[in-house]
Image (cartoon, rainbow, N blue to C red; front, side, top):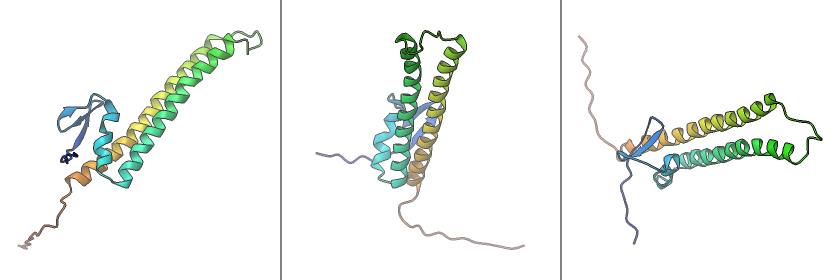
Length: 136
């Protein structure tokens, strides 16, 4: 039996995500269910971009040092030894890829969350209002 639950706003503070005032321990992946439950094309697109960018940056950031290590440990270097500059460039580059990729991915996720909150807080029915203007 499916139970329908009212969606609540998502907040991002200090690198942590909160749903209905409760911290999501799964981090950025913990917001997936409410975002998808909104059934909005733009929100879904932003979340998919977040996952794709994060996956690509994690793969590149992890494979770069691994390829470097395999190259030098399996004799692919032709007897040439690695310099400390090469080593730190590869490791620094992989950390840079991870940090930049994470920043871009989180930006996409935050854009999706902003839209989610905007749609959630937008009045669902038309309301009648009255405006008065008086000139002195």
